[in-house]
Image (tube, rainbow, N blue to C red; front, side, top):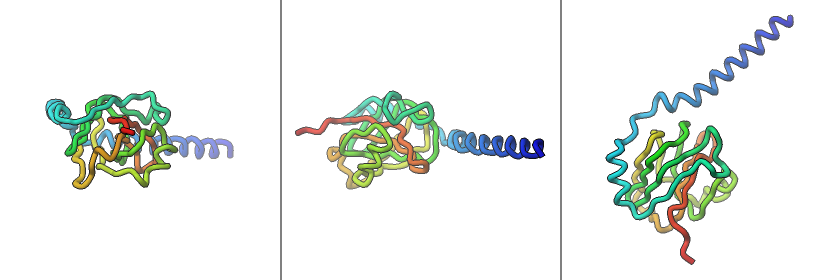
Length: 160
């Protein structure tokens, strides 16, 4: 009986670990190629704003982080750097800087979704028509599937 119970427990643990690894690695394995560095650099050069993404935010951890430069223009948001791989990342613009899940969830209804991120070594997203980047201050990368904060950067300060 102990042997059967041990087999059930170890097999369930292996199945759980395999599922978790699959959730983590599937986005990496299925991700399209990131835009060429030259394209990202060219697009970033024409941006009105830029800010640095860092790993040292309150909501970032070993599995949820971003680093590099985020550049924002009226037409595009460009990321040059790396993001921790994961599923269902969405870039949002917010009116105030946030650095963890609770802060973002408190203002998510006021945030505007820019688009989904499918590459983790830089991305290029078009700003949707009707979105004025001057109405916002911060770029947030959020994992929609798991409600996880990935990273954020304040590209401009509010003028009082």
